[in-house]
Length: 246
Image (tube, rainbow, N blue to C red; front, side):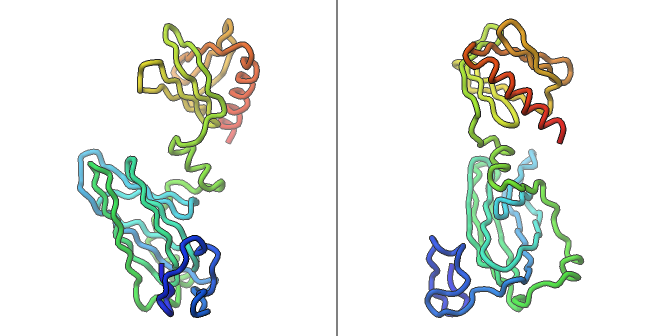
């Protein structure tokens, strides 16, 4: 990323804190202005409608399919955009002092992502409230007050509160208990069984096990070690109540 005045390369480990160029001393952006960012999604089409996720400052999440355009406004200054498709991630830092057009190409088979960033000339003045209101802005899929933590939960990349060996019926395996869900993975198998707390109607004691009653009268029963049985039961009841009363 370069200074728009002297074109010197800005230090990557400091850019989010910079307001003035460390080389020429000129302001890098004018605070208080707003600009339009358009992400043009392009890629190999498939029958599954594969989407690419676009994160804006770990606060907003948009989704786009090949041929679609994601439009949003941001304030002047430095912003971080993260593109995710399948297991691939690409992150770019952007100094916004004008409108930008970003072409995001991704392969729906391999997941590879490439971006081309273009600054729109003649837009340094920013957008007023009327221009923003008349723009065809995209609606975010999710807005996260907790930043990256909320997105980690959404994507299943958060850390478990508990990770314990349990048995379920005739199967033994690992039960990971998260703040929004739990996952049971039987030994010798890669596929995990995920239970979202919003689907759980009640958690009951059952002869040294916990019985999670889910929608559709589905029971998921897991044995829990005695030393943390009451602690886990209380945690699940508290989290499930919190999730279902939002």
